Length: 325
Image (cartoon, rainbow, N blue to C red; front, top):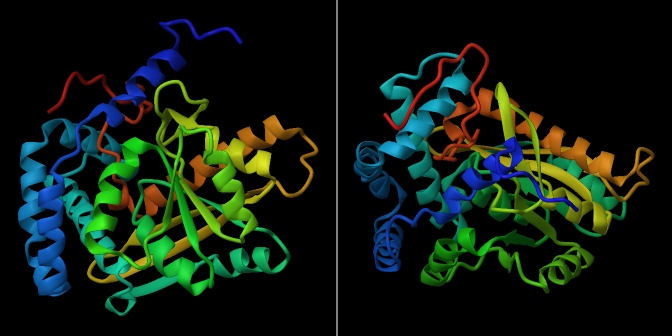
């Protein structure tokens, strides 16, 4: 296969998309452990009092992330975001991080959770599907879906993710000894596909975050919030190769202790693909991007990709902008 020219749109997008993985994680294992210790000892109501300090620090001292968050909100809201809009997004992010600790400890009683689409997902399993792929994103709380959703369905959840995504998450799991933490399958290793297949054969949900690309991984450019964006094709290709149903999922934070879990079917590769597998994979990626856009518009403050997601592309009628602000 011929390589992409260095100055092609796809090559430039790949180069830019790798930047999020190269950014250092904020915080350290010691700070994570201290934060977890305090949050679990003082309880959620008191712990939430400190969220404004954390959100304000991030809002003030992360100018690059603030710039790209503003770019996203402009697209999702259809207007120039106010400072209140931008802060609200950061505060929602901090809230879902805190709530992840309680969900992993099995403290479901702390939350008021509504849902849609879970009946269809359970019906898919009841009709004999051996495991289901859940494609999530950095929209809302995956912990809500994997923790609450998995236990409601009476099945277990495994998360397949790259090492760059898994580092701090595994640190949290080890710190809190979470009984409901999902199994982690590190991607980029030869045995990853075998572990994914084994989990599916055991009837587990296998979750993957499908809205970020890393370097030269297979990807497609599709429309998203008014401009071209790069989405990885790997998760959809794995589902197609293993012939499993695929569901879009997210746990939307609605303020206070309220969440809304969403499950929407994207594709069913357990059935023959009359247009061919490659066309079905492409259609699945486009459907995923459409659903992600739908919920970015309905719940705009739930999007937590604080980098140049569009790799320099501009929405229609949007003036060029240079550099963080």
